[in-house]
Length: 171
Image 1 (cartoon, rainbow, N blue to C red):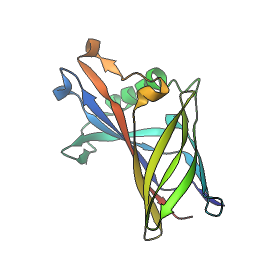
Image 2 (cartoon, helix red, strand yellow):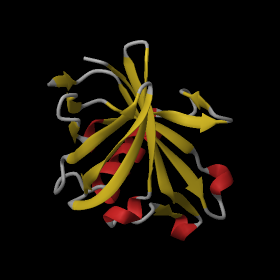
Image 3 (cartoon, helix red, strand yellow):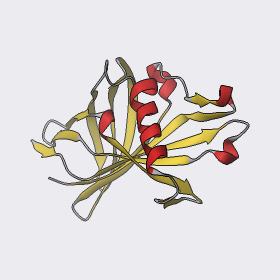
């Protein structure tokens, strides 16, 4: 059994709506997580704490603009995420259980993600490169009963898609 608590898990959100030109696509980093990988059994389990998400900045032309948001904007985004979108006071933890399907160096993990108190299937693509696991998954938050966040009466909102990327050590 391998336990992984270090590495990088990024969450990307995408703007939408009439006034999306004044909004931001965002990159957040999840600071607290635990993964257990059992290569012999072919299983992966994970625990994630969404309130540990750190707003890194706005994405512009595929690049992080770390200075594109003020500290106040970062706090406001984090508060909206935890209080209005994910309601982490009621659901402080997300969980994942899956099975590895690896054809070295490329593979996938098929499993179930419990988020905001609901379960839905998820497929994560992965590759092993230089002693690391790297990969991604695209999620539709509505599958977990999470409505896209809206501001200014819907003139600014988030798309019903979130992309997760990860870069983790092969513990």
